[in-house]
Length: 525
Image 1 (cartoon, rainbow, N blue to C red):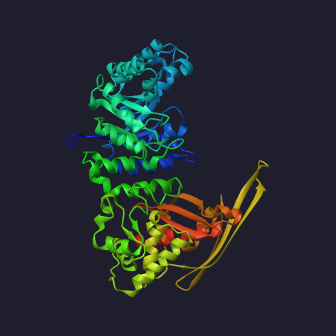
Image 2: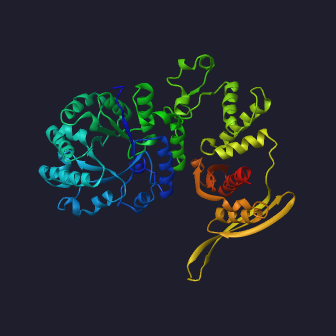
Image 3: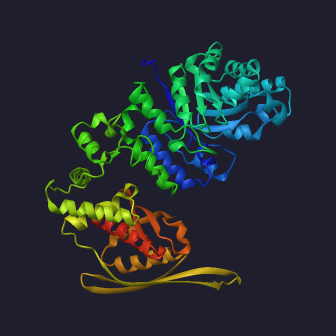
């Protein structure tokens, strides 16, 4: 098995959107697509063309040339229509990509009770759809929905369904455990039967995690010969989620020496995992295997001593291989080492025994205790470091600001919200005052601040705020909750993120906005 190549198929942007509380915006999908591209995955499922305006716009906006294949998801043509005349199917085939994954029924119970057609008619639908799609596209996958339940209920029909799809032109047969109920000990018998009619090179699996076995089942399937594994980053998905592709990929590559396209970029997987959670405004669980902030955290006297002498004795893999870092909670010296490594990225040179570094470490710990999370806001972290360790001169200083909101009638006698901001700042001991209206308080504050600064710093014209997210950190406090604001900014050169924390959302927003402007001026003044 070690000489085999396993394809990794990510369905975060489509199946992951089924998660409770997750709703991808168009910009969210593009940002996540970029980081998934960079990971070097084999397939990225982009969405369902024709199902909603967001997915339609997404497929029209795809970059033209990439090594990773973007996949359009869809389903079999409807009963009573031919494949050529089914508008939903053709919306998928006309999406502009060369690969589609089409879901079909393989469980006789669903054929009879959901589709309300005969078993033979379902096979005809599979044949017509896959044959037609295969003539139109470079690569068609058959997503065998509820295959494992179908196999247990009617083995012959489940096998006949996937055999029909393969003979009709499907290059991949993906066996789906759609309700997540399959256990690992059941796989060997089922997969051995499947391999009698479908070659290993064309077999994929997609497990859900309802019994907490999705990672185990995915790995065991590969050991039994399967060549494609589907899943989502961080296990996103409906109910208990999908197989966590982070865990599956890390285990395959690091533990089983399986060849994957992702192997050369595995050290980026921690950043990708956290970036996706930040984009979705979700808190990343600390104890996630491989990529969690506590995945390589050690605490306790004798334990710490042993880890410092021989990390391999307490860590099953080197954290750097997945882009994570070792954290020795009790050891101040080790904490200093982690900080120094981060400072090197900003070309801030300090020595291990420099008392300023230990003081900065305490500042970082206090900030994180207050609610700051610098994993997703490297620009704010860099500014914190420069303010603490260098003679950093601020580009301006705030004297005061005031933001007000009101609802007033427009020319059509409809009530519209209006925000106004007034701000007073000092630049090189000169006082500047400005006021502005905006669609919201942050918009108004941003405009007012720019108006005050632009005379001194014309480059601020190229600065754009492209994302704004608020996370409630203490929901138990209701409207008195502590909030964290994350702002993503860009100019013609790069993108960066900043954060602010306060009990006042306007104040938190100003802190993040101030960091964003300061970072821009620092780098591109």
